[in-house]
Image 1 (tube, rainbow, N blue to C red):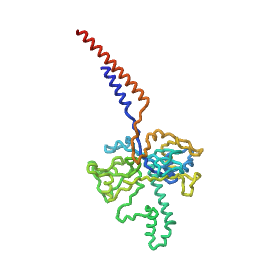
Image 2: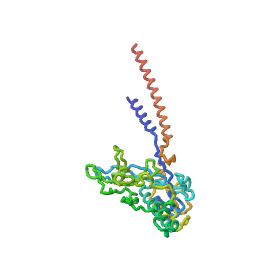
Image 3: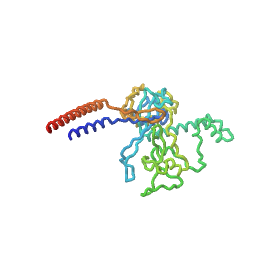
Length: 383
């Protein structure tokens, strides 16, 4: 009996030791964000806070979005039976690359002289969208004043500008007149999970305890390379507002009530550009210029792994506090698909397991030897 228990314990321990450790792999998609944009500045300031407040070295870098992922954690703020006890935390990973080597078409952005960072997705998005809107506003004003300046003397200036904007890839400059009576979607409102008021006095579903509230917020795609907007039934944007039995997705749900597709439900909120951290508003395009606000804000709040970063600045001190965590998120650049890397084994565990297996075999052989001798002794006694 004792021998059987010992064998079971050894076998159980071996099974645990042999259990492979799977590294989570995230596809990062080919997304770039330059640090000179408002988003680059905000993202960078969220990533690192310098004690002396001098982040001038960042001006020579560009911000590159690499991907996002979800983690589940206990919800300390859960109040009531219906509140989700487990909430989803969403994180974004980005990289700071030297502006001269940051590549739009490269998923990693660059392969040397970079720093890797991790930050809350909502903080990243708020900075990104604010920067994007400011950049678009600037582009529209510039085009109206210069590129499309001739439209001021046209018979129909509005139509002329509309065509001019469209021809120059500035469709976002053409204001939506909302002739169909639909409400303008407030994108900046939903960078954090926010309650959605159903249009046209839409009736909310009931769950037995009253009406169900609906919320809109960002979430990571299954592959981790895109960020979309979705409709949820809780204030933490954890549970999708969908009916799986009837095949109704959260985006179908939005369409039924709003009469139009949910913006960014299929298109990613994050673009593919490298965002320069140089503040170009005043024509500062070199390393002696000002750092963009977006980069400063994002850099301050992000977890950092700067073991590969070596800017030419006396004010820089590498921060490697988040390297272990970021290392656990393996970058896989295989046609935009998230893959699982091969299992990782411990050499020490392998040696120990081999030793136990050898001992187990020896014990088994010795038990068989003793049993054979006892059987023969019984035969001799019976004779």
